[in-house]
Image (cartoon, rainbow, N blue to C red; front, side, top):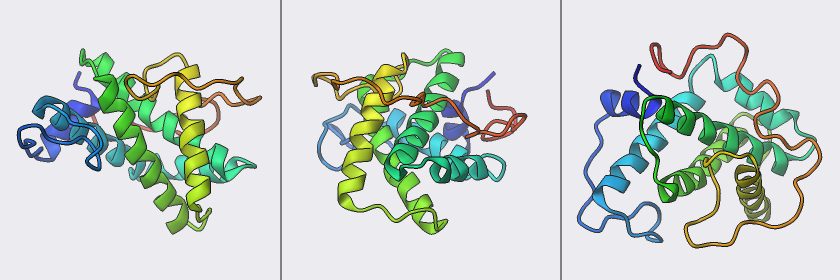
Length: 183
């Protein structure tokens, strides 16, 4: 069965990166293969987030947290991990730099969704705190979803009580994958 990344590639053209392309914002040089994987990853995550059956659960996750920073970080880890899991089930290996940088874009997209949904308008300070928390949750979750930037030290400190990024009703039981026929 195809994974989310394969489905994203099939349903949206991925433009090849120029030689020595950039994964995000001029910060990371990437090979054309990494750039293409990044673009497919972000497209798959966006397709999942905005799926009519999945989006209400994500908005509830953003709303449901007593702390908007925690809700945003948790939702970003959940989305990122789901794309990674789907790719792995399809036999694809996600480059750690790709998943890390895609997670950075996903958290910004989720903050926009929260704002547009009337859940919360994030300040730059809250975005920074949510990004740090996302990295902490992702590296503690046992998956490679977010982890740390390549070459960076892992975050320190204990996870917050009840901070399992996969807990809660982010994706309603029985909801289909982001697109029909996708793992």
